[in-house]
Length: 399
Image 1: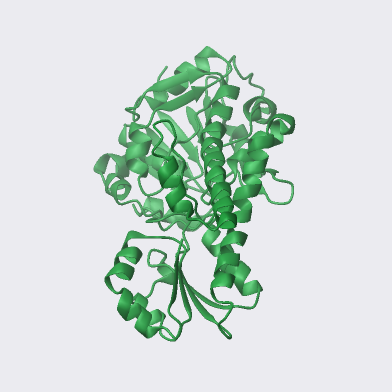
Image 2: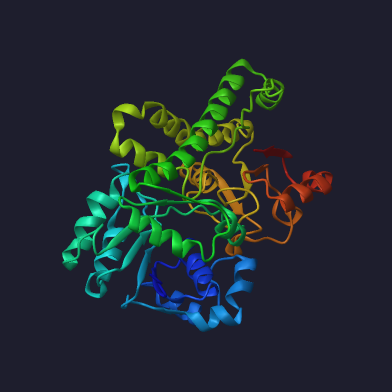
């Protein structure tokens, strides 16, 4: 069964790369987004995310011929749902409104034999308990004459093109036919291995991948706090501990950010709070980290009258322009709420750029590097004396 026409609902960091690669593979692809500016950009061949390799692919003749965008779904052979699943900050559960809205939007267009693929990261049992009842309002039966699969995204902002093509992928579905149809589509643009499993396993595996990282970051941050209590260097202690052949402790940071790691562990706790106590504790440790970093900055300037602080770095990790869930932004907000005078810059974020470190630290009392972008560290090391000379109080903190 050839699934030629594909509608991709949601054309952000996940959906748009998938749409582009599907179009490159020869599928007739319609990208659907509620943002008219995004729809216009896609139709004009303009990538609205900063991915140079992907932009080059988008400009290829085959992609331009096969990809178009619009604001509403239409009839197709397959539907990909790649919309956000943000965290409800008060309840600490998944906000499923975008997924539900996307599923409801395709109901008028579903027909026998269609495939629906969910790429969004979701709590386990979403396909069975949320999507299936919605899709079956069409009069079709999931697993019989309508096919549903979950294929969680595995991409890294800044390297999307390579990862979407070369990473292994999970194809999860309750029935074999849905798995086979989804695998057939993904095999047209994925060179990594396609592993087939059931839908619940696929849903949980995605969450496990990011939770593993969150727990390990929490261990590093907690050991760093212990080192602070003992007044020893966390960097030195971890480096020496890692000389053990079976130990690989991460280094502590300012907190956990991005669109996955600080959110996905909560989805596991949502479905089984009794058996996710370590996961919950790790989330607490990492969510507290910005407050610990803010406290270290306060301590560094405690003897300075009305200190002026310059903070560098607003992204959630080095060498990317992505500011989603950024702990650096939270740290600055904490200090501002405490009444500190603090200016915030980032060379990779368009609205936060600056001419040079020397130009922005003149008269400052504290320069704090929250995100160690390569270009920031390079300039800091190259011009450290000149930077210190420009400052009223030469306090430089690096995290």
